[in-house]
Length: 248
Image (cartoon, rainbow, N blue to C red):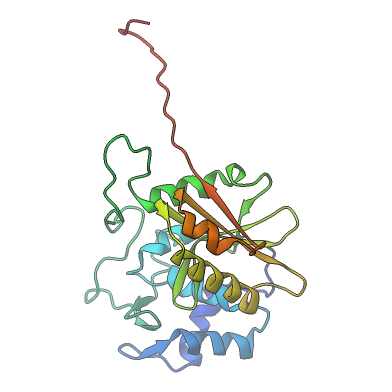
């Protein structure tokens, strides 16, 4: 997506710091950042502001999805809670999360061997983010100034994958490594409506997809009559091609 202003958002974020009078030890909120951009750079969307706060926060694992620069030039903030930040303080704060020092992540579930499930939700997410055509031909990952649709922030929460279809409409994708239950519908609809209200342009539609190993009957029933929500099940398959030392 072409830049709307002469400077990228990551640089405008640095200008925001003195403009808001933020000094070391001071805290500020995501809402303050969103408001500052709304007043000074109104074409930049709320989701883009929130995503760049993540990118520039040294202790947020999701910054790995947003191309945080390894030279330290994106190490500006430290996230305190879901909506509060302060300036990053070298020597006081932990080493910034980067590709060379990633934080660990625990599995969401513990599937039994041979179940055909992804062991980690982030593995399923990363695989599908690279292979969105498996969900729908022409589907592509949302990108904007180094920000991607992987773990896209929406009001303090994160969409698993935000994609764009062939018509330029948004597709919100929620993933479950095992069984998908009806409670995920409320989560998906909340994310879809946030994108409609805060991120989509006029005339740009938003729909949703739930992908799980198994779709429960309750989930099928809950989505009946919701044409903007689609359901899909994934399957894993592994094949072995002998190279040497094995009997054909």
